[in-house]
Length: 157
Image 1 (cartoon, helix red, strand yellow):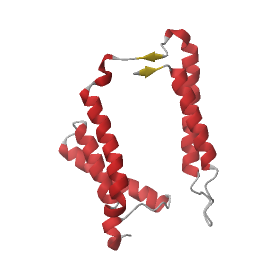
Image 2 (cartoon, helix red, strand yellow; image 1 turned 90 degrees about the horizontal axis):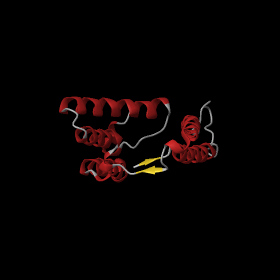
Image 3 (cartoon, rainbow, N blue to C red; image 1 turned 30 degrees about the vertical axis):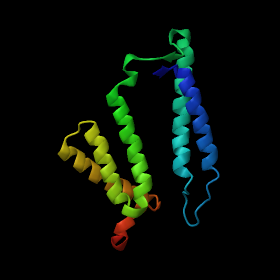
């Protein structure tokens, strides 16, 4: 299914504005120049710029593009499987991350996503583990956002 670019752009613009407004409500952190609102503000600004470009491009296309276009492959079983794996990964993370910890759950979710896209085992394992460690380092050490340690709490750095 494909929506007109102007419609998608306007929906994204509303989301970007909501994110920017919400980011301003996050409290400042004492002793730090950057608080928890910096990252959402950057994401909201980037999303807003992208939304404006998409909306302008869609309005310029005018009636040459249908408002909604349904494609033949919309109900492809592979697509439904991919959506189910992504949603399952999110639900698994929400349910298991506090108990098992980010460093166990994130590589498992990434591995499932990579394998569902037919990425080789070695590549999938290496990228899932290295990517999870890098994400954890970025959030835990650089951004000072604690991620759940779960059963790894005794060895938390």
